[in-house]
Image 1 (tube, rainbow, N blue to C red):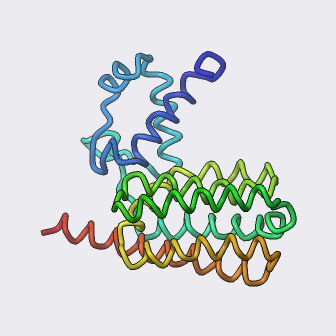
Image 2 (image 1 turned 180 degrees about the vertical axis):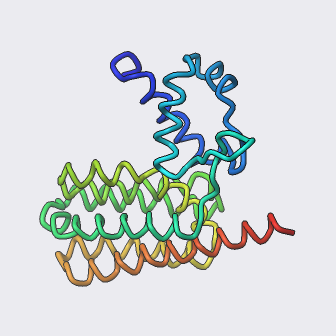
Length: 221
């Protein structure tokens, strides 16, 4: 894969992942010579990658500072969740149509694994397993064009979900909703499935916004 893709695209994906996951924190400068050396590339493809990151709203050019990583804003969270919600709702009828008994059993197996992590208080492992559950559920729609667009937002949702999942009350409620979502798929109850999924996504967004506001308040202390 590394050989078949343009260097600028590889640099873009590497930097995007590092920014979204917080490995390159908000406010950090991306010095071209430094990052070109780190990625073992020339400055030309790096600049092209940075321009694409700027279009994504992940970095900005600041006078006398150069390229700086942007902090996620409330507007960013609102927009990304709005996109995700709209796309997710499009997949639900196909999920109901396509889900097999084997799919239901596999989803429940993931939920049992999540039960164990919750009992152990292992939030670090729980967050990726929660995303894996949602990805598996969504993939049942088999609508590849929609899935590809959703995948382009996955890193953002993974970061935001990791923020939201640390709220204990939300964590318990969301996990019970996961079980209920699977039950509704098994029952082929599309209206109830749609209503619960909308609530589930909106609750995650609300928790993420609270976490973001708390994070900013702590930074301003």
